Length: 279
Image (cartoon, rainbow, N blue to C red; front, top):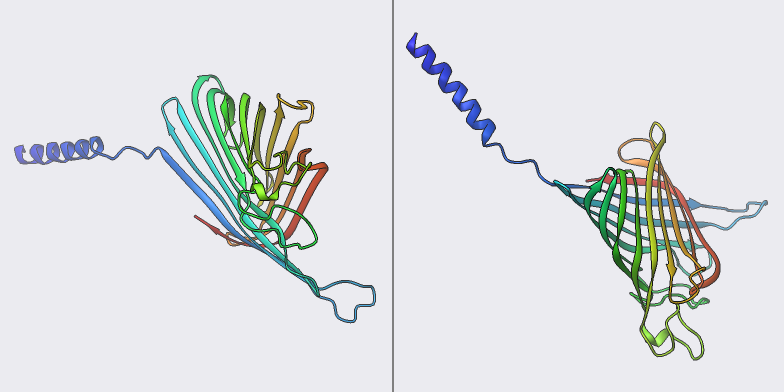
């Protein structure tokens, strides 16, 4: 009987010791997806008309977030690069973006956090269209924004960051500025432009139905120092219709308003079949 009691006691102590020495749960959560998007049209003796073309784009959407007690640190890295080849024309870019968005927050009350954010955005490559004078070098332009604010976060899929005291630095190669003409707001002979204003960043992801999700990313900025009524807008919608874990139909739509770059709306739309790798 004593032996049985000793065995039971040893087992209980062993279980208790194992439970007490379990490694703490990691504070980091990481997830991402790499997508190769392709679409193609071919015409041969097609009476109704049409031009053969093919395009492809490689994209990365990666989140790495940290959570501990009342602190949260959220990071999103977005990168994509795409090319289009139309018959008898030079290869052109269909997409080109490198963006890192980072927000640190400390719990205040309810869904609110005291926050500080940093956003960096640029492109990878030269403008391949010889007929246009676009961004021709890496970091031309490059946008760096940072400032304190308040984060309203209901969930990882619904959040808004409000930063009423945001510094913004616009970076270009000074060789791209022209006499009597600013380049993305940067004056002739200079390589940077400093702005101070208010920014709002919003993120909303929802499932429209089974295997169909929509991601919405909105960024607004008003420069207190010059024409504050001209609010810069950058909105992106990513619609993913999943066939399985590896194949999906993807639609990306982006619209930009930035009066320093163009006096009107810029729009971009890309649709195709995607091959996905989740990690």
